[in-house]
Amino acid sequence: MKTIEFTLNGALRQFDIEPDETLIDLLRRVGLTGTKRGCDTGMCGSCAVIMDGRAINACILFAFQAAGRTIETIEGIGDFDQPHPLQVAMADAGAVQCGFCTPGIVMTAKALLEEKPDADEADFRQHLDGNLCRCTGYVKIKEALLSCSANETASGEAS
Ligand code: FES
Ligand code: FES
Image 1: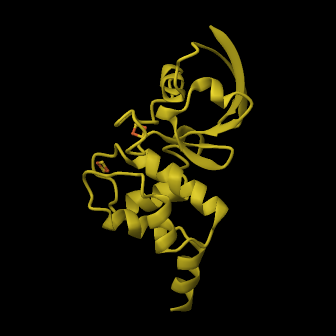
Image 2: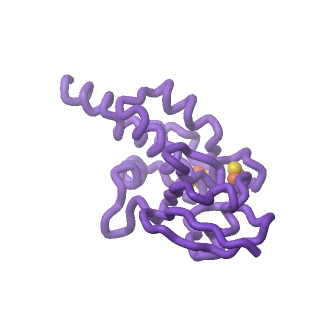
């Protein structure tokens, strides 16, 4: 057992971890079950969280690798009463069916938009190529994410 410390959803937290515990195991063990376990091998993106501003797959990161970092999970960006604009957009566009992929998609898109607020369709395609959805066919997801881009907002205002 080892004790590590990192900032989780804005609060500095300490955790006792096993050396081989993954970040997704730790997050879900402490109740943050919005981070979903799909493939558990880094292939589906359903476990995506943001570490120091970049989307990463929590299933292929050991918990000890989060020590000293800043981690954001879906629980940290919005809730039922005050959802994040990306969550609103996903719901409004009908981009959520079973919802299993949704937290990972929202977190990955959030990281992209923080780095590039005017992300275009090509940016979303490239950035989210590791986020799989088995339900929607991606069309509604694309609409939802693009509606949150400053690029889209600007072109929408112009038209
Ligand atoms: S559960 Fe982590 S990438 Fe699939
Ligand atoms: S909504 Fe079901 S996997 Fe994406």
